[in-house]
Length: 565
Image (cartoon, rainbow, N blue to C red; front, side, top):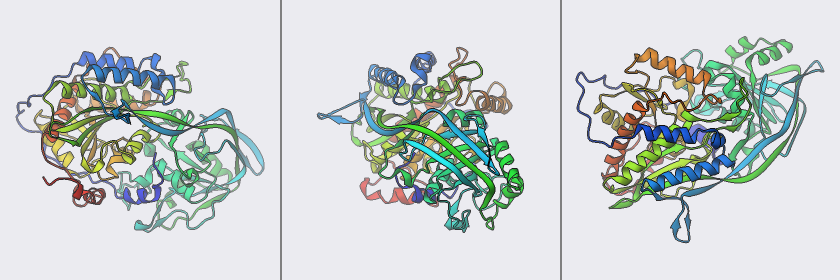
């Protein structure tokens, strides 16, 4: 997910983003501004093609990637968009090459736990979900490694918090809880219900590597994780990717994975420990790591590990007056590819909502800009790879931008639109205080659409979408989401729909195209995004983060590279 800046990043993102209150719905609907009308039939066809079985779940470095690149670039070209990727012989390509470490477990891993030297197997995908090693290991051979419960796995000096208390983890496997220490109480030093970066599984793996642990297992619980075991299994037992690192062991322990809550409770009990009691202790500063006495874990598996090259797809509409200043629209094209079969035997993770919808929106917004009056600033359409593997495509672009971040005005990220009906509201991934959000709220109100802050800040969505690599580098960036207050059915219907998607479709083969989808709400939301992006592209404004935002300093550092407003 990240280049070797893990420790500073954790500190940078620790303060959770507060949730400001905004004006209620206007009493009388204003007349919406003039904006392009987006063709819902075209959106449906694009989602249908991208999520078809022929595209094999759009896994990076597969035949599905090749089909996706060919299709998206053909659509952008036909729409009148110009290529905006890597330079070759003085000309822009349609892609930006993204080198990635690709790792896959060869065959079935052998995993077992021993209690008082009596071994019993653990089944990959059932009791445990082990990821292919991303530390460069070709073979993993862990024999009778001690297990140490390390609370939430957090080291936060600015909060006077240390779950490790200098316990030596070399040769040991840490077991930690997902989310933050104050998730259950809703009150504490980590933002209450809202997740900080310390609550993310990516941070926990990084911290385990810094502590020298041979492995880390995260205890899965549905509420603090914000998804069920099916999502964990499907996301962690297939091919893994990471950016290419000089020292991957600094960011990854050899064994990374999740363990079922019931399995963890059973292991704790075998060691004479009460899981619930220890979890409560872990919610305090006084917590100290606890070794599971007479309990060890062994694992053996080969890893097919190699460096491959995936691609970000990049289109561009060059600005008429200030082409070096850029407004970015982004979406990820990838999904999970081919993986574990579901109950029906389906192995293709089609990713219709996640994120064929965002990719289709990107194409059509590009079409609208290409067919309209040329904006003064440039528009970049960034269709990134490997979001599902840890925001790797957006991380790579933001670390090696094709167009300077200092002169990137804003990033509008589109991930998993609701392809159904119209909502009276919209939401965002997290609720960071920034002028860009204020502008989006004001623009949406022209359609009589109101803002609902992220309904589940505890899920850490701010850190899970492709706007985040830009945000942490100071670029004003936001991920828009479909609202839940549906015109047909209200909030109750919207929440039921969202919950059903998470339970039955998210990161599962069932995320497939449906002929009944209308795309009416998505098309309206695209009008809002187009309008604000167009306004910024024809202005000399530079939106910024709020004065007290943790991202403000990074933006201000580059202020001298931007012309005055």
